[in-house]
Amino acid sequence: MPTRERLNEFIAAVESGDHAGAIERYYTEDSSMQENGAAPRLGRDVLVAHERAVLARMSHVYSKAVSSVMENDRVAIHWIFELTDKSGKVHRIDEVALQEWRGDRIFRERFFYDPSRPKA
Image (cartoon, rainbow, N blue to C red):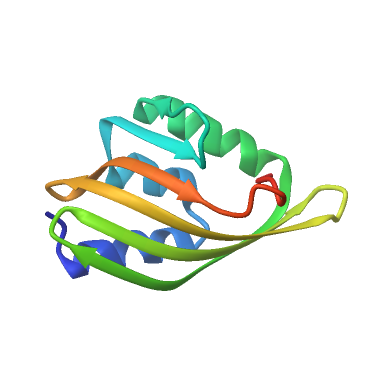
């Protein structure tokens, strides 16, 4: 079960723009991420590679945790992301991430957002 301090460290890493580094440091080796109803991506190395590929297409990324709730090994974070791609188009994503933690690391994460506003 994560501590509030550990969760706040994770949120601070993401808000600082270190998205791939946050995955490396805060996710289990066998972790998964799932976009809405899509099939999950499996394994921390796959998650890091995917995140780096997304970030490579962007010229600027803004990340803000609006709120977070913890209950034992379950965490919900309301995120606002604004990603500016290299053409200058801004993608705004208002998302809730539901996480399952194993100890002090994230094991499973699923994202919920308006599917008519696809992720970058």
